[in-house]
Image 1 (cartoon, helix red, strand yellow):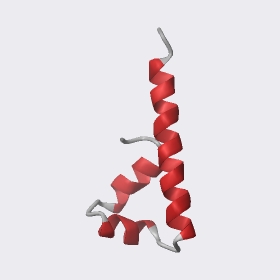
Image 2 (cartoon, one colour):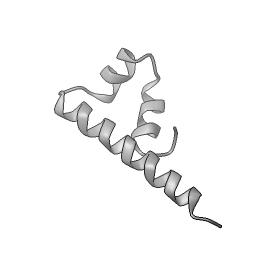
Image 3 (cartoon, helix red, strand yellow):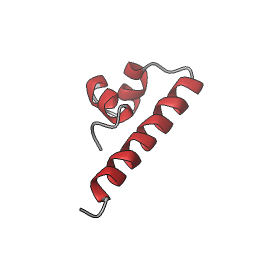
Image 4 (cartoon, helix red, strand yellow):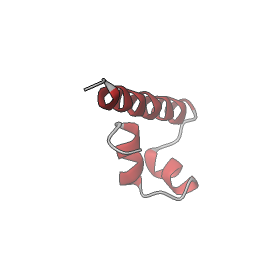
Length: 53
């Protein structure tokens, strides 16, 4: 294996963490941000946790 899967997973976790940090700095809940971008809150949770791209 050439390392791509773990690299990709790390990238998703990093992006998700950046989204969560920005959301928290903005004072938004997951429900508020999810609604603003037309997602279910559960989908946003998965994105922030790096479980979904």
